[in-house]
Length: 285
Image (cartoon, rainbow, N blue to C red; front, side, top):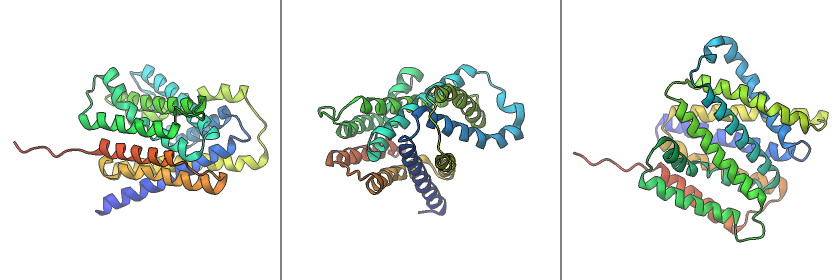
């Protein structure tokens, strides 16, 4: 393993650990606060982190010719966040993490229908294997398959749609502009819901809320650094460390013991991810 790949792997593993802690904090805060409040606090913290960037670049970030795509990405992204945060408060931690990992399997279908991008045979195989894994986790033939599972799956779909929207804008928009508009739109959109469902926030919860914003921001920065240091195909597999983090924290904090179907589903989702990352060598002319 080269030094760059080793460094990227460490950043990705560390980033996933931080985002796993974020998920655990969301599940903990869901016992006292509404989902709308938690989404708002998360977005408000992200906007605060963006302030130095805004002050440094000024009106440069506001220049865009595709404001409608920014609005769509913001609305879809916040909707995905609502679904995921709500599912974290009502599902075992490991299962919520695994359903979130199914998001990339929606992207080939969205890319085909919206952008006209034809998926390769490995991507198609990954979709079938991945959703078989999701079915094992959610158990649609079991009495435990409820509205909660559908909300979690909807969140994964919306997250995929948000990512394809970013790809749609990437030809003309810088990453800084995309991040800026999402931060502003997400904070503004989530504020009314938080106000309507506002519940008193006890003094001891503010520390956890600040920690939520911190680990979420550091986690995103770590993932960004990882994917800038090495190709996605080389380090992407390390993203599945989130499954182990979720299982460990779910067991230690909430006494959640994953069922054998959950582990089977996890294996299939990881296998699908590996298939999706596979790039066959080109034949010599």
